[in-house]
Length: 135
Image (tube, rainbow, N blue to C red):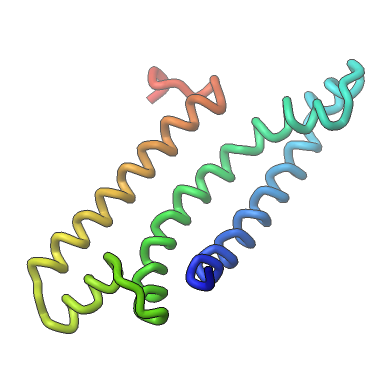
């Protein structure tokens, strides 16, 4: 439980701050005022209009945080003496096992690229104005 908390607390604080600022920015937009004037409740406006438009920066930060979590697991696995990929990388660096280090780095880089690709696909799902034809 403690390793998960030590990885998640900092990332959750950053994500909460970005979410808050994005929601406050969208709340100032004219379409939110129009939705409220049409008679939508505050909850319906928040869930239906505000959060969908505020998700773009939040998803971006979540994609960037994934790489930080991967780097953080190397430290956490060594501090808490847990077996895993981070510990393998650390021991391979200590033993100068270049092949294992290279393969682990390539695996982690591929994971980051895949997550960034998924984030780009989520942009089109969240915001219909972003389409593949605009690229």
